[in-house]
Length: 178
Image (tube, rainbow, N blue to C red; front, side, top):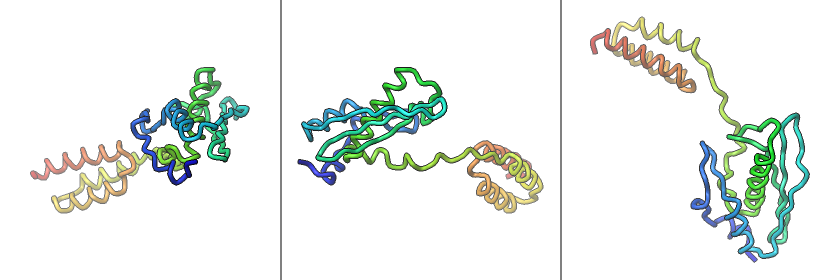
């Protein structure tokens, strides 16, 4: 019987699919590999649980003498789907099966970082306006470089704000004749 240490080193990259910034392991391939590694492996779907209008599915996989249970919301692009239809529930169940198999080691590494919260969108437009004013008041290229560097460091989490200060910098640079 294979050990977790052996199973976790299996490279699953050729059997994944990318959707946006998320990577999914093919559930059919995961099941095939699981049954090749442990012909006695079984799985069972637990009763889903509603959270307001969204649904959480559960799957337990017994393999290698151990049962591991995974949960997964019915979702699209990492957002829970209100009032999911049967196809969406089925998709979540199959993804949950692949995830439960991964808990035994097969492809677990593709889930690394999924528990890290998404960065919140940051709106620094008011702050950008203050930096644009500072940029427009620069009277030398040296000062412009320093102000822009500080503005960029302050606003780097808001792409729109960075774009605005870059435009202001380019305009001021042209005005200064550089």
